[in-house]
Length: 248
Image (tube, rainbow, N blue to C red; front, side, top):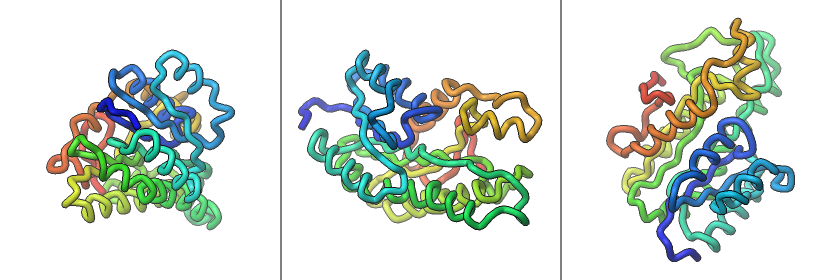
C-alpha cells in the first residue's frame, strides 16, 4: 500500500471519449493516481501508451453492469491503494433515438441497465473505499445529460436515454441525501454536447455537422466543477460543465 498521499480517481468508461479525456487531463497532475475502468484491458493501447509516459494509471477490468467486476476492482484497489478520493461514473450508452410511441421496450431496459444500474453498482462497490478518503470530502460524480432534465424537457427523440438519465439523477441525489454524515459529495453533471462517438451522431439528428463542444473543453470544465465541489454548495444538485445549475 502506498505511503505517499495521492489524490486517487476512479473513472469508468475510460477507454474513449470523455472518459479517456478525463484520464489524459488527470494524468498530467502531480501526486495523482488514476484507476481507469475499461471493458477489455487487453485492447486499450491508448491508455497503455499514456501510462508508459506518466506511470500513474492502473487499467482495471470493468464491464459497467457487472457486479463481480466492480467487486474485483474494489478488492484490487483496497490492496494497492486503500482508498479512493473521487469516482467519476462516466460509462453510458445512447443506442436508440426515435419517438416514444415506437421506442422498443428493450431499449428502455438496456439504457436503464447501463445508465442507471451501472453507476449504482459502481457506487455500492467503491463506497467503502470512498469512505476511507483522507481528503475529508470524497466525491461521487455521475456523467449525466441535460436530456435527463424533466424541469426543462428538451425536444430530442431520446426517450430511453433521457429517462435513464433522469433516473440516474435521482439515484445520485439519493446518494447525496443518505450520506450527509460521511461528508460525501455526490452530484450529476452534464458534459455538454461533446465531439465523441455518441455526441456527433446525436448532433446530426438536430441539424448540426458535429457536436459543438470539444472533449478537452468539456473535461476541463467538468474538472473545475469537480475540483471546487463542496457538500454545501454543489452536492445533491444538477450541474453542467460550465458550472451552471440545471433544473431536475
